[in-house]
Amino acid sequence: MQLAQSASPLEERFLPSEWQFKALPYVWAISIEGDSTVKGQDSDVDIRFKDILEQLNFGVFLEGEARKERFGLFANVLYADLETDQGTGPLDIEVGTKVFMGGGGASYRLGPYPLESGGGALVLDPYAGFRYTLIDVDLDISGQRNESADQQWVDPIVGLRSILQLTPRWNLTAFGDVGGFGVGSDFTWQAAGVVGYRFGLFGEGDAQVLGGYRAIGQDYSDGDGDSEFKWDVVYHGPVLGLSVTF
Image (cartoon, rainbow, N blue to C red; front, side):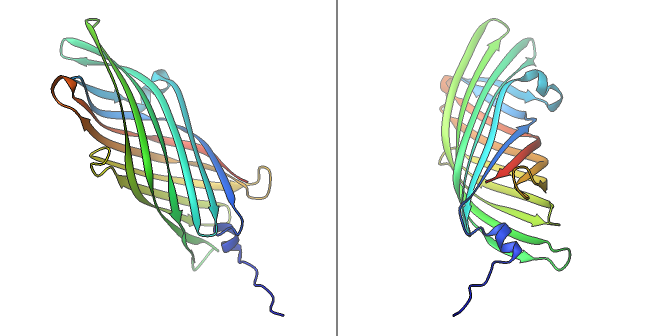
């Protein structure tokens, strides 16, 4: 009789033989910088980090992942309700912005590739999926008139995530993707880097606290003249979250 070989600790960590699920609620101190056009009216979108607690009316940020061996699925939801005042010459424009993003996709894990020292390892997760965006923008121009518009689109995305395990408890994660390609937006991109620390919450090593920085850029336009809508912005800011595996 040939005995089955047991998985190495790295394989158990990165290539689970049974379905493994992760939930990641997080806080994103989101700032938005860029330009928007609503029904032909141009305005700056400038909500800075220093004003974020004052400007953020409501926000929800959540990601989830399922993995078995090398195959993974992911989904994420982001909703933010923000507003700011912008001075444009003699005009004062109050900009109210509601942003909803939801996405998902699949990944395939490469590795783990052991490091020479410290028991660390590197894995790479190429992924592909989509990002749905719904924008609702309201412009209140010096009390003279209001302009509002909502727009929605879906972007295909392709990207890569790398996870570098430094020690059994500490790791670095970086990921980035690009998309749009004229299907939804003209172009969109995302980049993030976080530091993670593993600890036991409900079981051994089943949780991580994560901290880092994330940015998403979108360049979308539709229509022309008085019906033109344009959204050319970058969302960015520090993130802090808790990942739980079950």
